[in-house]
Image (cartoon, rainbow over the protein chains, first blue to last red):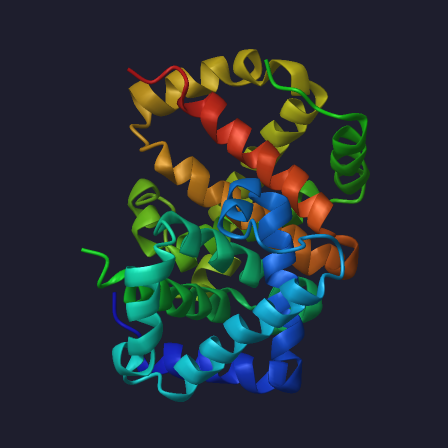
Length: 142
Length: 147
């Protein structure tokens, strides 16, 4: 799966529109993921996962920051996410299936907060991008 | 036996009452064909699927989307017997249509996104969770008679 020039333009457009609210989008996506897919909570036994949790907000900011970084280096996702890829392979070892779940929730977050932005074409590009990020993050698992 | 809480039933019926089955069905199916283009393999007789614009405007896509979501309506009337509701359709999709059940999950995933864009902030995490549960169970019911 390859990101076309149009995909890259679409993804950059989404994140330009989200702008400074990326942190909120990250936190919202995480909250949705924990609610919709409760098994994902097993990776956060040390977190308070209640509504408005500062820890979830903080982690949402981290996740959003990584996505923004990836978008800013969209021509070299493997390079941009290399350290995170190591971290996930060696320490976090989040099962690969979970990246799709977070991706789904991120799409829902964008749809609820910016419905006009998520046209079918942009939806396709963003889905591809999120898949590509997940692939990079799990690339060194074995 | 699937358990539905009173809250979940309310979140389903509340949303469903405000949904245009035709619009949502058309949109969900169009998005499936655009986001996962390999799903077009089942619709070679639908005419022009050559671009997102063509897909969105394709009358056969709209009609089929409406058909699919109408069957959802039947499921919602029979939340405690999804197996029975989808038994015949499950056999059809296996024996005649030869559709990989993974496609039901893919189409199911389109539904919360379509609903999210429609209901925005009202599509709360609890609402999303309930609908994701429903589409997952529908996909499961549709796959049940496969052999």
